[in-house]
Image 1 (cartoon, rainbow, N blue to C red):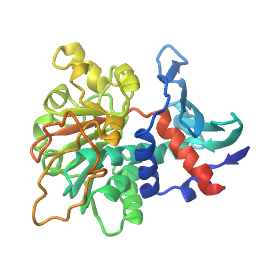
Image 2 (image 1 turned 120 degrees about the horizontal axis):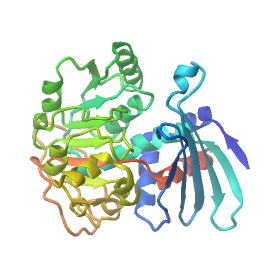
Image 3 (image 1 turned 120 degrees about the vertical axis):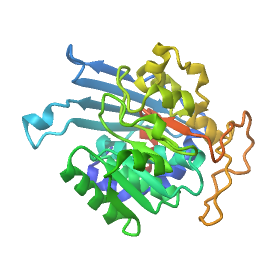
Image 4 (image 1 turned 90 degrees about the vertical axis):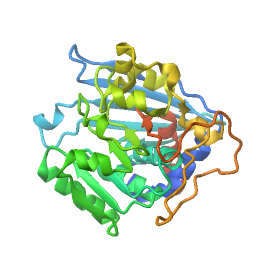
Length: 338
């Protein structure tokens, strides 16, 4: 059995190959029980989680610990530690123990980008990024890999972290204009894609600022009593999720509007797998004539229950993370390192 560290993960992965592998895997049969998150104290701050999944090729389980107070204890401590163990599906033989933290950055961003391929306008040029953590640059670069992003606006509470995030994005995409957000209402209104990857407990912006045709991507929250957007946005948008089994149990973005009586879980249009299989149609839009257009994936696949999506629809993708995406990332690393 191989042990694969974070440096090897970063060397092995790129967004085009990872997004393609995710699309292929999500379109095929797989097993994925609800992930188990165990609070380790009364405040529900420290936690331990286990995420199993399997398909025709691989069995995988990710285990991670979340200790948000670690950075205050020591600059050498991370708030999250994670490992992914993968097994051969035919024989059950252990294949590799892969650094899960680095895979999580890549697969989280790649899943959001895959959703953007289906749900964001094909001529989306302006990305508004909420968040300045380690995931932030991955999110920006992933979205830019599937849409013709020309401008990225970064919002964060720390000017130093915003500057660091801007530098990281520019290192990976020097052709894109990247600036700090100095007028939030204007930035929200101007954005084609809004991507939120924060630990914020309450909505980051007023949904009234969101323009028709915007795609909203929410990945930062996995608590039933917290959320990155308000209830009005959920009520206005065409809502999709990475996996109902996890989102319906954890995501305050949906559970709070349900408790308020303004939204029902039955209104969720579908999962990312439905889009990958072609059983749901992607956004139907008419790109502006002055903008480059990238084709949506799987244009010839059969589809049913086509959504209303067009240039004026607001689409929203809520992700809390799936074990199947972890499986894809770890297996791809293992294959590339072989």
